Image (cartoon, rainbow, N blue to C red; front, side):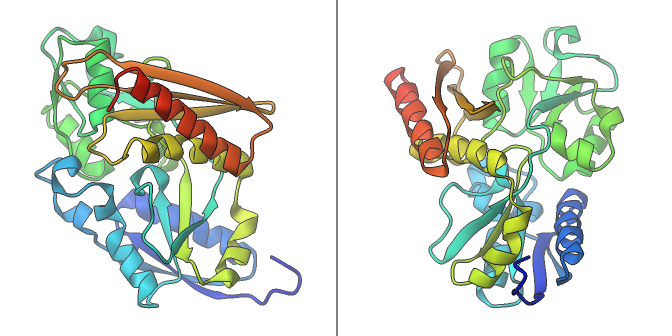
Length: 306
């Protein structure tokens, strides 16, 4: 905290799933350590309530953040902590992404009680995911499998697996690691096989645009390399009209001062082969990282993605 800045009283709006609460409590602890008074406002969002249809059919990722934004707008809460992969690429007017925190493992995890990896599955086995991105990437790896919808929070998805509804499921490694459930991970997919979603594994903190006091208070929690990476990824998705109805993967890595961005697009109906694109730049800034995302999106579109 700035030596002259007074401690703030901060209310965090959060979904009430176990993972969302972990994320909010993590931010709460970091802010408390810096002298702020921090409480949580737990909320159930539409995205948590509608579990019988895929997100792409009921309004997309914004269903997880609208109620939290309303709490910010009405002054019931000051900040909202999000999994960045659940945050729409364009925030509503009057809201800003004030902080991107250090990223956890962005990769996808294979979870199964019977099969050690995707390669071990027999033809026709049922794999659970409601992500169009994971669906097209899984089909590219194993076109002989049956991909079935899987909605719900982490515990619900694991319960459905344990009940035998699926031979295996694909989840974000970050969530399992954050909840000390790494023992459920049988295999972590190589990015070359299962390119992650834009922002996967990263936490973002949203504020009202007019709250400079909060922007200052959150600045010490930000991780600039993570922010460059997710800015590039989200720029691809934004340029492609990104939502969860978009079968799109985007993943950036930073080696030294070289930022490399890969993206992949597939046809959810399985009509077209995967389209891939990649580009790099040196000494990134937020602006050049976003420009890199636009460049990669153009390459995808020129190769047939839409």
